[in-house]
Image 1 (cartoon, rainbow, N blue to C red):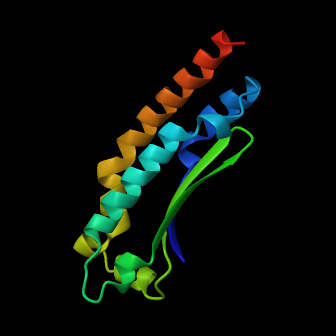
Image 2 (tube, rainbow, N blue to C red):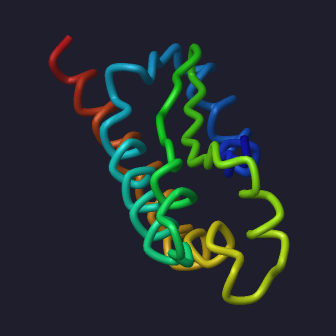
Length: 121
């Protein structure tokens, strides 16, 4: 499966959340929203001939301790070939280009939700 994984860039943020003892599973909403937008933007750039490639798209968010991983993937056997052609065929790169800032904003919203919950303790 061809995937876009969104997590390595934000390791410092994760380490800070670990130090604070935050469990992000309960606060993954903003990250899920950004991943949904990445999915929709990426699928929107897929060239459609038969619809198989577009219809093979999958997405999700996984949490582990203080880590969040958003992913968008395509299960069609020729996905890597099609996207590897580059340019207008590279739907994942094009989708990421128009969505990447949303992940930075999602980190801020998640941080706000975590710290707001501290007031309820």
